[in-house]
Length: 62
Image (tube, rainbow, N blue to C red):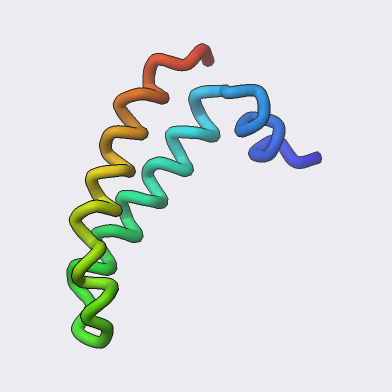
């Protein structure tokens, strides 16, 4: 298994923070793209979920 997968399974902070950051970036991308209305519609909730996830996982152990 890779280090990232082991970090996710073991609830390590670094891997979960990276995943939360990717979700936030996805939400921002969905907000800025001009092609799909469904992506724009769900962009705020995606960004919000990523932000809350980042706050929660920042309390995980190193």
